[in-house]
Image (cartoon, rainbow, N blue to C red; front, top):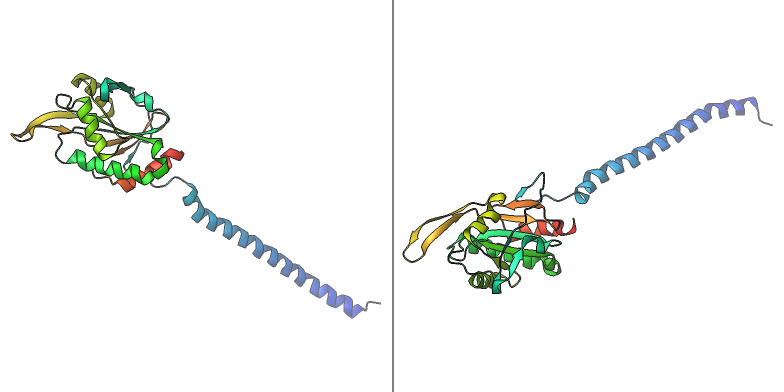
Length: 220
């Protein structure tokens, strides 16, 4: 039989047991919440989009289609590459510095993609149709990478393709050795698989930076 003193002892210890139980439950909940906060603080950055390079188009818009002349007299349209990511550059083969430097970086970007390189098409449109024939332009871009494509056309056709994209070009005085030069916008435009302009790269962007963006854009 339980004595009065034993009942008193039990009554005195039961509240302490309940307090310990609630403290244990509270500690467990706090640990779970803290763990979730830490996961959010560290994991969300990995799950979210990376820091893209160049100028990100906050409201991407579809690029108007254009058709220019490729090698062997073949008409090539921008929409022919729907389903691939397009790196679009306006330059010319007589360019003494900016164009070859840019094409070197684009070459390195494509090479860095390895098996994903087939998902990307680099296109250079000549802003010097007076001197750049479809054949000479293709030979020039192929020197940097065999997958690169060169397109040209009449001056009005090139203007129609360049102007909506904010690309400017005009002749400037050169030397007896070089002939005239072309001042032109030296940006690289990244167009996604659906034909939307997503990124604009200024001159000086590195191939590694472009490759990092391409790896994300290809999969998204």
